[in-house]
Image 1 (tube, rainbow, N blue to C red):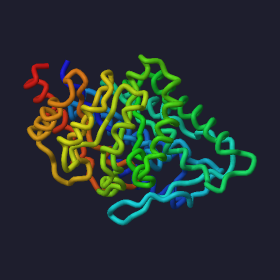
Image 2 (cartoon, protein in one colour):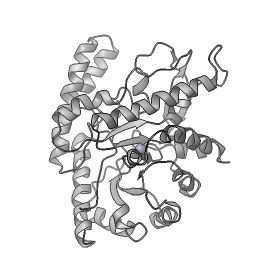
Image 3 (cartoon, rainbow, N blue to C red):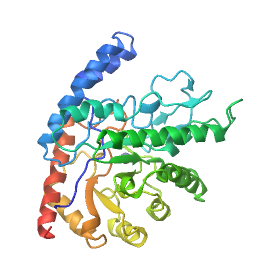
Image 4 (spheres, rainbow, N blue to C red):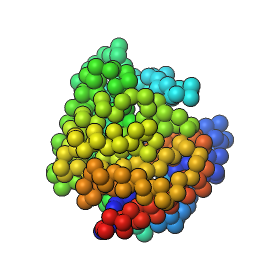
Length: 355
Ligand SMILES: [Zn+2]
């Protein structure tokens, strides 16, 4: 078995889907037209994904509207759109909604995306879901009358478990929990208490799964990626990674290629990874306009193999290529070319490492 390689998830939306979004938002087309575009974009994305040779693909998150973070709350009526803000280094801000009333229920579950992708894919499909900790930020600090934070968190944990479990039951190759707010938590609270809170919360969900189920569950960490910018790349990995590996998951998808000192990060991984945990190291930088070569990818994997046993090593991209549906800073062509470089470079490294 060669070294496994997987994407993170998102690919920039197709041109016609992007136009449909704009028209839908302007009230010029109905939702059923948008749904047709979602399906068409998913089918086209799967075809191009398979042409890269990637042994595991995603649906490119074409149907996650409007982002990897907010898909489960699409269309909910009990939201205040002016919620918490996440500032990115490039100067822009992403705003996330708050809930106004309980009970908290998802409007969209990620397994609904698999209904389309599994029908059309010829290779295994992974599915990414958002973490409980990310959605926990939706509870307003001022509180909600008749719906305490404890009640909200109880509902959230039930919904988050359901989101993961349904994907596994439907036949996803694996489920990746997007935990981009892990590194952000250190930036918000350098004491680490906020992060510990997130780890505990997500473990309440992960604890509900058996060991064999957890072997198919992974955690993605990155410093955020939007319009070629990040929100927490300046946070030292040494403050995140020891806590990260406390999460009850079998796989970790770790942004690494864009780190300034990869060897240091790999050493921290080596010292803190639990023996059963597989590390998918990021070998492609989605927010860089430069196309990596397979040789560069191969070198990064060989470097990682000095710190991580090869039977617990995998490769991935540092992040999705378009976590927010309106981010078109990278072309689809470049995204697929980068994925192809990842696949070829991983094959080269597998051969050199004799596996
Ligand atoms: Zn990411």
